[in-house]
Length: 388
Ligand code: GLA
Image (cartoon, rainbow, N blue to C red):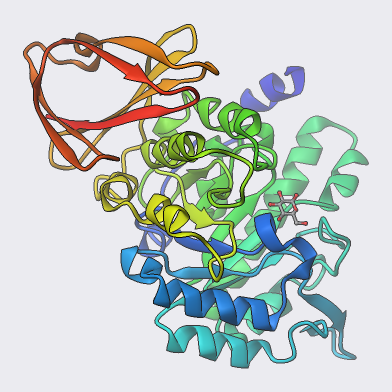
């Protein structure tokens, strides 16, 4: 905390400003799939192709999921000229990119500004420009750049300010390298929200930045991360998003109400929607959770204004997001392990007369609801409305 406070006073620390360039990619929160949550180190060429095929066949691509992102463990040794090569799991990255592109999808990759990635594979330290050029040559469209072992370098710095500068310089270096390729590549910062990244992530070219440590497929962790995003809304906007980490929907550790909370909260947060399950084996129930068009429309709303918490009463929290058409997405969440009746005062959302409401998960028009709205919310669940 002391460190954070001292950093916030640094005159060099710039507030989030959307660079003109970064708005050309990720004008809306990126949607796609990432290998880490389900496959971890078991990701390979065949599994990535299978995800791309399932993305199309399931209808997820047409629902907006475009990026197929390979996370850590693809990296092999560098060749004699220092060029990064994939390891034996990925025989031909260019051919894989061509395949993914042929499906109307885009391919993402992962690296670290440190010497080693978090799983101990080759990082980009000292090879930033070369790696960016390699990614562009392969046809990569998205880079997740994960701090990992750069932490060791930062720890050796004489002051917190010097450590912070090492990190900012490293992220800026890769931004410049990516830009110099001329290829539009979404730049995803991953440093777990340290040093209030939302305040400077856009100024180092980030199109999105992780605001927290790693998610897991448990309600407690998902809720800690999701509800912990209160107060960050003003730092996000088109081209530069807060990233509370990838989705766990369909991985089996939460029930349907809990996954609805996950999706609803991420939509209110204008969060990237990166599915983290195995798309080639998912159930129709999982597919329905991932592709609910009302929920996706909230996440992808063209105004790009992130929502925030507007009221809390014990385990009941009300979050709202202003939408481009003048309506609001309203999530009434129950963090308790038993169902509860929420007493929602819509005046806290700025309304002074009854509103028209639609239940987004049920896809049902509720007609007019009064300013004092009582509704029963399932355990760990949500009632997700669009009101006008
Ligand atoms: C870190 C990141 C994860 C994942 C792993 C891969 O923990 O936060 O999202 O990329 O590294 O090693």
